[in-house]
Length: 103
Image 1 (cartoon, rainbow, N blue to C red):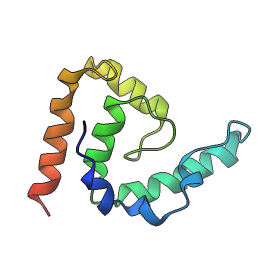
Image 2 (image 1 turned 90 degrees about the vertical axis):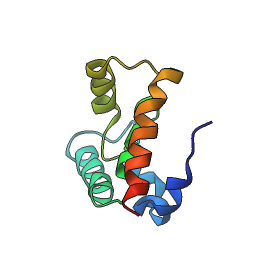
Image 3 (image 1 turned 180 degrees about the horizontal axis):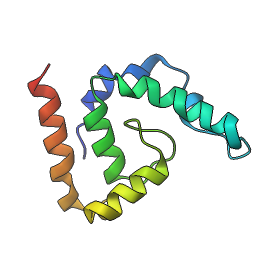
Image 4 (image 1 turned 45 degrees about the vertical axis):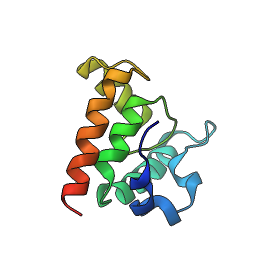
């Protein structure tokens, strides 16, 4: 099981969750503006790295770690990652460790 204690420190924990999940019927500039607003919350988040690592390891919808589903899919492909692969845990552990070293 993944250590998700980093979630307690996330900027998004008190934000409206709907901001991070674009309705499929929302398209174009409205969807883009919503994703941009969600990413702005993530960009200054102290736990962005472990959040991104968790999202890369799992197939999650919405904005996580200031990335979209498409960006994470592209990053997984570039990094040669497989979803839910236990060996991919090293990335999550590394990024989480880097976070806790700075707290």
